[in-house]
Image 1 (tube, one colour):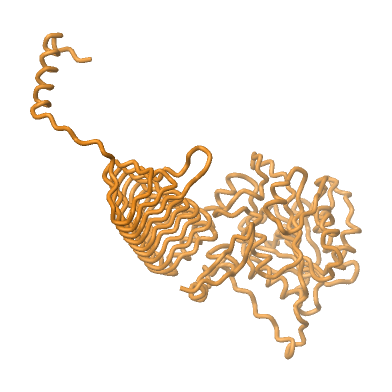
Image 2 (cartoon, one colour; image 1 turned 120 degrees about the vertical axis):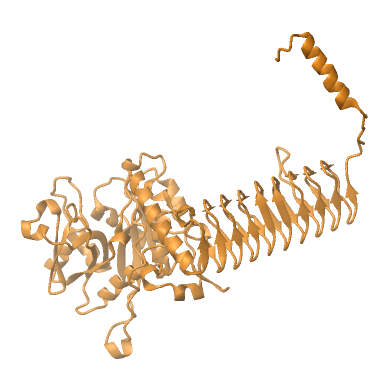
Length: 509
């Protein structure tokens, strides 16, 4: 299996997709190219025109301004709205991954007061502060200084609209290079119920104006083509228009939509392209966040199955946006994948498992009821059984930890067997220490390995052993107390207790 690096969004985390998988996904569920199985699965981007034959110019450099300053009051959360996750990735992370996959640079995220956590999350991208929330046009103006002398196109997107695909953004860029070189391209969509949305009034393929629903005439309200708020514009035209935007409206705000009318008044062409409605879902509440999660999870599940993964009960399996899956994998019900999981070809994950920051090699068997925490590496044909927790530990090929055990900060050699109830005591209240279990070692049930400690290759520990010192290869470690057997004790004990009970009148306690 060959994995192709597609983008490096937040914190350097890398999103992947198998190259052969990306080619084989049908168009109706094909993901955006920057992340495995995420985003909208609508029309792929049109090919770039050949500048040698079509007369089109080379693509104009594009910067991105991502609006993230909204207070998100409907979320009722101390966490900024755009840091709430969909499929394990903050909403703003989805948008950043998309724009960076299209090599948009620079990228500026507009934040509000008290949003230091957002600034940290989007680093190394720059942020611009909108101290007073005076509308979308005002928010974009706050990014101008951070963009410096950039003279290309500027894409304006929203951090709470995480599903806009790279294909759709590329469609907007293609329109900017289209007939007449429109100075402003607006992304529109056709919702099932357009009632509350601004309408895009088109004529002969050009955008004449954007009309807010409350201001629309009956004929304009009959238009189903609506404004998403996402815009791509020539930077010079954008800044000139924004400088003229006023706030003579009921809210006293500066609206980005006014750019269209001002650009047309200056003699520029404006147009609009259509995106899929499911891409343009904004998230403003916990309920909408749950809907977004459900939408993306369904797409992730469909894509996984299409590419050779068996989900025994698809509706109960939850992926992260960066989950990397090979082929011929089986996943049981009620399994949750946190961020940073890779599963290679042929692995089997039984039900009721929670896996995060882990790698599972081909042929490995995990679960049921297993927990793999960050740093877990399960080797080829290794077994991790029921009620086993693995943390920051590697199991080499063929190693087995089948029952009721905790293996943390450890290395388990090839074909070693760890008995039920084993614990690596890795933390002394101050420091975490490493446990080394050699290849072919056999750890007896209910052993406690007090780290730092090493059990050599082929060595054994007796059941219930507390191992504080290294065990040489092929040696046996056990505690020295011997078993004492008293013949007939159990029968005499029962007889004595029954007599005592009878003397008290047979009453129990």
